[in-house]
Amino acid sequence: HVTVTFIISFHPPSLIYSFIHLLQSQQRERQGLDIMSIPGSIDDTNNAPANSLVNAMLTDLYQLTMCYAYWDAGKHDSPAVFELFFRKNPFGGQFTVFAGLDECLKYVQNFKFTDDDIEYLRNSPAFVNAKPDFFDNYLRNISCANLKMFAMQEGTIVFPREPLIRVEGPLGITQLLETALLTLVNFPSLVATNATRMKLAAGPDKKLAEFGLRRAQGPDGGFSASKYCFLGGFDATSNVLAGKLLGIPIIGTHAHAFIQSFNKLQEVETMKVNGTDLILFDKVMNYRNNILVGYRKYGWAETNEGELAAFISYACSFPSSFLCLIDTYDTLKSGLLNFVLVALALNECGFQARGIRLDSGDLSLMSIQCWKCFRELSHDLNLPFLSRLDIVASNDINEEVLLNLDKSHKINIFGIGTHLVTCQKQPALGCVYKLVDLDGIPRIKLSEDINKVLIPGPKRIYRIFIGDVPTLDFMTLLGEPSPVVGEDLSCRNPFRPEHRVNLIPTKVSQLSSLVFNREELFPRKSAIIDARSHLLDQLRSFSCSGTTEYAFEERKYPTMVSEKLYHFFKTVLSNAKVI
Image 1 (cartoon, rainbow, N blue to C red):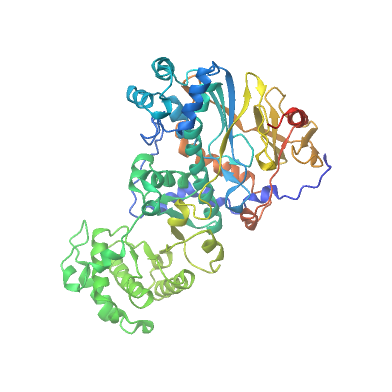
Image 2 (cartoon, helix red, strand yellow; image 1 turned 120 degrees about the horizontal axis):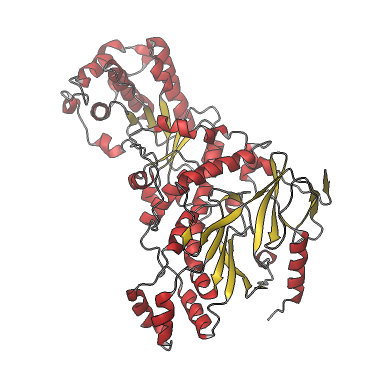
């Protein structure tokens, strides 16, 4: 039973996608991605912020000057409600992944000005005429003891104007939290969304590794990117610190410098395979000079000997995880052949190579050529492991590259850095933190730009389903009853009166809940794992009848409001005075 007064042109479940089994299988696939990895258990339940710079002083000056002015006017203890939200999905797409809540909770739980902080502020030019009692009593004792925070679960797929976080408490402290909460949500949500989009673009059977630390905006940007790209669906990181502190699988092989450091075979003639007394060099040379001579007209004896020496050395050091970068000199005429020689010799020693990495050239074409070589050798030599070798690709990969790769490519692992962690396609999400209620009176912000007009009053947000398909998100005022399964629901667009929908939900999911109450935190066993699993559930729910191409278009999934909120908004709007 659905009556649609306005025909909504959106594809709600097409958000994301017929290949959700990609994320569903990640837990078991992670064991197959342990190239140079150190397994760990994820533990991000430490209640201290990950970065020591996240403290009460991480704020803009105008938050403090407003706080002083509130205090001076006697308004600092007035009950206030702020909501944090964004106005437009990033990357020209149709969804955003909410991330960063875990660090927001750590921040508010540990919020306190130190004596040094207070002395610095007291002596700042902005406060030259400030009353001493503001510093000695108010700032010295301010805390989040009277604060409540409501939020969506981290990993939720969210949409514009929806309150991701609602903060309730005295006006002074709720105002002071603005800057830090925004910086703790903006980048994590942006990079998690970027990661999810790239995961979807790569395809259901591909693994993705984040390689962005060296290109990130500083150490904290790099660490945050590693953490929230994992939340967004990436399988591993090159960031060792993130591996240690968060338990994310780490991945890495070697750089061109390692290959360049060798120039002759004599350097590795006596090297033994780690854990054995076997000398690898002799076996490699037997394949090069005898067994494979003339095989399929490959130039086995014409490869770069320094590169071959480097591969032998690396295989001796890491026989169980031998994966080589093969494009230092010539990918197909040297790197590929040298890798095969060493892989065959390792196999005789009881070890199976893992694969190759491509870092330049036409990645699709190169992957196909390498795959064909492996398949031929696997068939002719009756060595099945050669047909299962990983082909890793890196080299300035972004979303467009993933979408435009030849569909016949044979890459099964992508290493992505710069475009992922810096979000080059869109460097900021644009979350805002707005006062919606003070002293029980709704507050509104007007603007000539309709997108910046604030919907007043504290709100609840629900996800409405028809069958198993998310159909729209639905906002109500706090005092309203929740939507009821099986009962008529009237939904309005607050900015376009002609847009309305009547429907009967088959499932209603409330999206926000209490996460912080008067210094009491509601911790999860592992916030990052919970958020990652929750994202998987969200993706699955939006995948029922979709196709992948819609994930990357700016189609509108509707967020609508109740009749009561609609009329309340229109009343407040009509009564508001433009100053």
